[in-house]
Image (cartoon, rainbow, N blue to C red; front, side, top):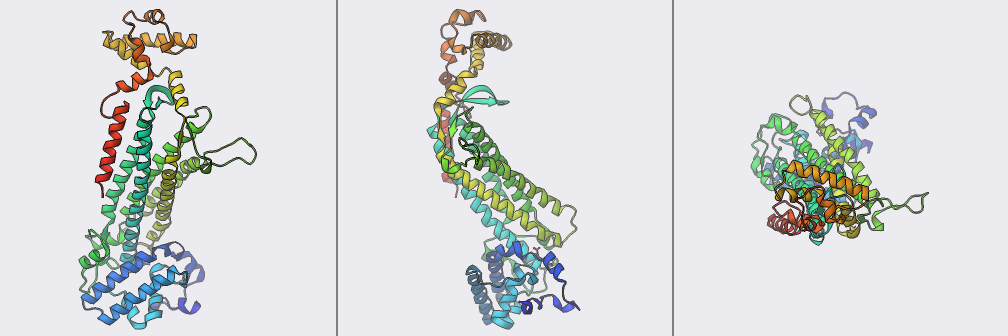
Length: 465
Ligand code: ARG
């Protein structure tokens, strides 16, 4: 291997070998080897374009394409001799190509630089990663729709300040989660459009003197367009930052859902139960069943936010065009990709298996005076100004607390003491079912509106490619 590595592709200008500590410090092969498929695809497209432009002969192009395909197989078989001295995935593959096919291999890099090469690889990689993540988010959303439909009538307490506020349906709550992930998927689709542009042709920074055809390369690689400016093409990492921002929002949303699962699975709530296979135990307390997957997802969001900060800080104040700083984009980007993908996948697996404790949810809504606003609204309908109604109901709640009862359990005479406008019909509005059914408008919690929202969401998903 010393033999291969002493032949650095850029070695001509140097009078002595690179210090081994510098080799170790500057190498990126430890993390960028995962770009091999994209690197090879980009090289094949580039070689075909060079042949069309008359820079490579047909035989040279064929040797290069076959050589690169053999290298891909070699990598996938785990037989590729990766070398740190050859710095990165690009030089490792190029050096290997020349080892395998000889002279023609040395012509591949014509009209190209690692600067536009790495930007191309990264965009191809991220495009796939976005597609994978969007597919997983969609699977999660489909699970949420199933569950929301099933739980469209299930009453639970809705909270503000984590205090019981008004009754909602569990289906409605799940559809709130659905909306978060819908926005995430939209954001990722938007990020994909800007990611999907071709940098190749920018070469090191200024373009190339060869008669290249960038549109032909873009077409082969499925890019929607070209990076318009060569300096920007090699230095732009906005797409990575945008992805990290979108991934951070996904993780933030997951952390909120997970926080709710953690609360709901605690015996104090007891709203849902997770299957044993998604939980872990305690080494000391035999009774424990801990929601570790949810906790870890909440915890892992931290490092993805860190990836966003790392990428922003990496790019801040960089002069045009390419700087070696950019090599540090990969650990952050790959970490954000891997963590978010794994978190969404696990959550998508988990959601269909949530065991819902409808009785506990209902009980919690009943205990918390969740229909107090309904009583105030009732008084308003009887002609009482809202502020006076609010005051009267507040006093009624205080009385009910003293008696240790729910509002619906107070006798009519007791209730009428707070407002003479209260009549026999008051008990209809004090029921939990009446309360949710009355919130019957688009975006409301009424069971029929939840079913409508599920149906609309299904149509929307079906209409997407
Ligand atoms: N490994 C480098 C990176 O990840 C590739 C580009 C290096 N270009 C250079 N001129 N040293 O950014």
